[in-house]
Every structure is written in structure tokens, then in C-alpha cells.
Amino acid sequence: MSQPKRTLVWFRADLRTTDNTALHHACRTGDDGVVGVFIVCPDQWREHDWATIKVDLILRTLRELSTSLAELNIPLKIVETPRFAGVPDALLRLAKKTKCGSLRFNREYAWNEARRDEAVTAAFEDAGLAFHAHTDLVLAEPGEVLTKAGDYYSVFTPFKRALYALLDETGVPPVLPAPSRQTDTGIEPDPIPDSLPAFEPDPNDTTGERLARPDLWPAGETRALERLSGFAHERIGSYHERRDLPGVGGTSVLSPYLTIGCLSPRQCLRAVLDADLRALDPRRVSGPAVWLGELAWREFYTHLVVGFPRVSKHRAMKPHYDAVEWRDDDEAFGAWCAGRTGYPIVDAAMRQLNTTGWMHNRCRMIAAMFLCKDLLIDWRRGERYFMSRLVDGDLANNNGGWQWSASSGADAAPYFRIFNPVSQSKKCAPEGEYIRRFVPELADVDSNAIHEPWTLPPPERAKLEYPEPIVDHAEARLHAIDAYKTALG
Image 1 (cartoon, rainbow, N blue to C red):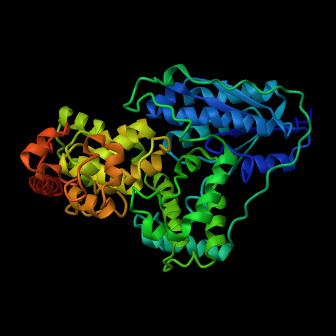
Image 2: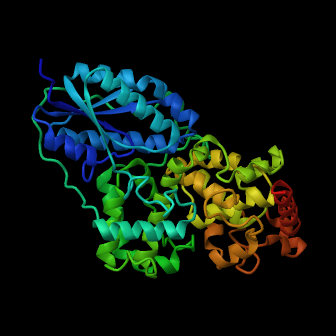
Image 3: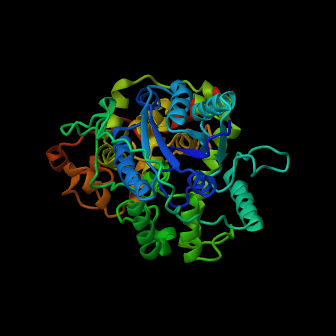
């Protein structure tokens, strides 16, 4: 008996129709229609600390995706299983029910996701059904960019040079068009839930734990492409000059759409090269070239989770940093989470996260290093808090950024390089506009004092409903250096 020709496309972090490698090949090779599926795994997502705001964006994007696919005669089915362990059987049941003889999906690289995909391919092989895994979420498949010794890079700059050289040698990967209309399968798409019980937004919650902000994060690939186009035409030229200034809107704010796959890295690369044909020169300093460097950082961190699996397992990439003796201070950690540390730039950053689900990248570094070095609290607690609040929460990039700040990761800041929150504030938010936006208690403080309000005369200081610094930075810096020295022997 011949195998069914219909193809099942498993959507994951690739919620788009344009430049979707698995979908593109399914539509080109199938001759009996295509069926799409998205699998909801609420318990697993909770274990991975996914934020309500991220799940909300995914569900709203799925509604947009389902409509786009329906116009192509591709029904989108929604399957729910609590954990990844149930995914192989769920996919097999759906493939048989929809008479699909093959499965296509785009690879994911974190440890649990990769093990899940191995189990799926084994199940399909045992059932005599075909499967095809595609490279899509990265510009180069992990394992293609290696040192001369055949190892994964652990320093960013040589990785970037090697990545750019590979793209120059093999050619810039094309942006694949949206598929044409497919054979009608007669299968109806499934409704998309408005929310999930484990991720119900709470309109009265301002901490961000149960936050949904459709006003800030419109859903779907059309809106994502509009944002990319707007950035490419209006702000990318000055990106290298404005990217570290959180108060001026100089960044792309596209990370949520890259994380869930409304945008592909190839679409972003094409926008860069349209703006600057020489951006792939690693020595190039221009807005487009510097933004491409940030995309290369995303790529770098994704390669690291394959080359160094321990980073997916709550371990330091550099093992000897696991010996740092962290402080167990729930009160200080709570103050950091709430944006009540007494350091305005740190508090503004944390409140931006808690109320919007997103934080400016320079502020992520400032806030993270303050937790690790000034408070000497385990970076893993901060990593988990960020992940549980971020609309763009992504294991590879969140972990990479935290390990950079904690000095335990790839190309990390040396342990004795510790950001001074006051000097960082004066440099990145010189007029204090970013602080005033998110710390309204300081809205009337002038630009000279807003970075260190404890220097105000006592009568003025007493009027502010704002805490004193929870730690003295100079003293905390010395304690952190001693703790790291002890851990490193």
C-alpha cells in the first residue's frame, strides 16, 4: 500500500508563512495537500518559566497564522499535551487522523526541545512515516561555524568573523516566498484559545507575572514585517549611535517577533543588506552593520546551547564559576524584582520589564550585573525572573546575557568588571527621561540629581517616596571581587 502524500507541518518558533523553510518545502513537494499543527504544552512551558505575556502573543499570533494558512487551504490544528513527553504520540495520532504520510518541522536547539524532536523522529521512523527537519531559525546550522580545531567558538568576535565569512562564501540565504494555494484537504482548522488556564492574565497585577499587553505587542507576521520595515527605513542608520540610550527609542524592538518566529533571521539580514551592502564586513561601523552584529549575537548564543549543553541545565558555561558562594537574601531579591533598590536606572529597568514585558538591552546588562555583583545573588534567580516576565523570553539569549553579566559565560565580562549603576545611568540616560517614565516618584527631580537622589538635601529627599540604596556600590564591588577570587582559587 502506497504511503499518503499529504504532509503535516509542525509549527513551533516559526509562526509565519513567508520564509518558513519547512512550510515552503511541504508545499512544494506535497501533492495531496498540507496540514499545519501547533502543540500547546502548558506544564512544560511553565517549567521553562514562559511568561504570560509571551504566551498571549503566541496565541494571538496563532489566530493570525490560522487565517493566513486557511487562505492557502492549509488547516491549522491545535493539539494540547501537558509536557513534551506526549508530543510524539500526539503527532502520530494527528498524522494518521489527517492521512499525512510525512512530517516537516524546523529545528530547535535547546536541550529539552532537541530531545523532544529526537523522540518524534524516532516515533515516525518506527511507524514507517517520513520526516524532514530543516534549518530555519538560524543563518547557519550549529556545527557549521567551528574553530580550526573543530570546536564551537566560545568568544564572539572570531565567531562573527567566521559566520560572515561563511555567508560570503556560500551566499546570503534567500528569503523564501509565501506558498501558493494548496489542494483542499477538506479538513477544518481548530479554534485558537483566547488564553490558557495556567497563563490567565490578571488585569489587576502590575508585577508582570500575569501580564498581557496587546497594545504594545500586536500579533502576526504582517505587523512584524511592518515593524522591521519601519526600523529599516527610519532608525537603522543611526542605530550605532542611539542603541545604548533607552530613552530615545533607537532600537528595533523586534526581539519578540524573532523569538516566536513572526520574523526570520534571513528577513532581517536582507533588511540590513538593503540598507548597507557592506554590512557583512566585520570591521564595518554603521547602523546596519552594528545591528547585524546584534543578530550575530543571537546566532552565537543559539550555537552555544548546542556546543555547551550544560547552559541548558542551569550550569555555568565555565564550570569553575559554579563555585561562587552566592548570598541567600530574599528581601534584596524582592526589592530588585520590584524595582525598589534605590538605584534609579536599575529600578526603571525592572519596572519597564514588569509593566511592558520587555527591557532595553543595555538596561538588561545593568540590572543583571547589579543582581550578580552588587547584591551577589545567584544569576540563575535573575535569569528565571527575566524569563518569567519577558515577551521575548528565549533560553539561549536570556541565558547568554545572564552568564555574560555573571562572568561565567562565553566572551563574558571579567569578574572584576562591575558596572557602576550611577555612571551607567549618567551615560545611558543623561537627562533622566527613561527614569522619569518608569519611576514616577522621581519625575520632578532634576537631571543632576536623578541618577543619585540620595545626594539631594534632606528636606527634598524626605519628600520622595523612594527607597534609600539597599547596598553601597563601592563596598559591594569589593565583596563581589573577593567572592569570585575565592571561588576561582
